[in-house]
Image (cartoon, rainbow, N blue to C red):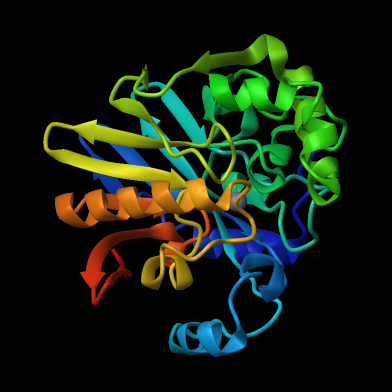
Length: 295
Ligand SMILES: [Zn+2]
């Protein structure tokens, strides 16, 4: 199968693939870089003034506009299973993204080896990498998992008309890909153990059916967050502030605050799709908010 990575993309993917980064029981985990997004500050934080935002962004070294959030796809190997959490952006979304195929190759995994693809939600940077350059399923042998509520939302024929002009392309793109994959998709609900040691955890708000996943073995665990906590700066310091990429920003803030409280209390490790340092870290309380501590 043709790979879309440029020579530069291959090199950076190889550098980013440092082998297994985390073990949870017999689950070995690493994150693979799909590149990064390029997003205007004003899109991500439409409700905050520069006076509110800039001190936080400057403190975290991310004050440049546009912002360039990283894209961390989680690869989990367990026995014969080769599991991806989300599928990257593919060739059609942003030029700075779509590097997952090169990162997989650098990790010694061919798309045919992947046995399961588990989606947190159906935004382009998580879903669109699921098809190859010819619109065929890239992970041809894999069973794909999508939450029932997420599935229902994007399959609802009224969604494309009600989601708003800015998100209509996203809705059409999600539906088209889900239709192509329909025969390979298994749906699941909140709390279900979709694979041994992998439990779905509803974190609705970023999208109507957004799911995170708790991977657990005995007392060891890690939470694959998806976009439930979408950045390491504003959403940690001020989790109550609304984020423009969240479809229901108020609901997402409630989910985020509840999750941060739990993660800090239980000292659970996390993997965040858009968090720095390959997305791997822990959550600690700081002042009235939180901070991200890379592993
Ligand atoms: Zn995302």
